[in-house]
Length: 85
Image (cartoon, rainbow, N blue to C red; front, side):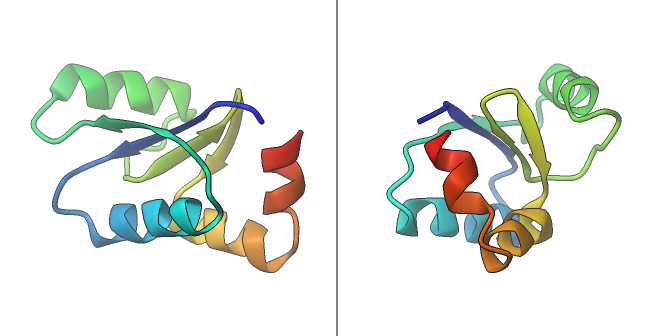
């Protein structure tokens, strides 16, 4: 299973929802909290091709996107194969 990284902010409901889905799938992930961390937000945005909203989810080096993107992948049946790659 590739490493999963999620950039979050502590007060973000979409971050909590994305983490809940990953937990439901039994996925261990690295959470990088960028609340009040300007340098962390800049690094996240660079890695996410300019996207500055949270969450930003990465599976391996694949940029999934935000919470809606993560759930859309799951609904389409594409999340599990990506996690298993």
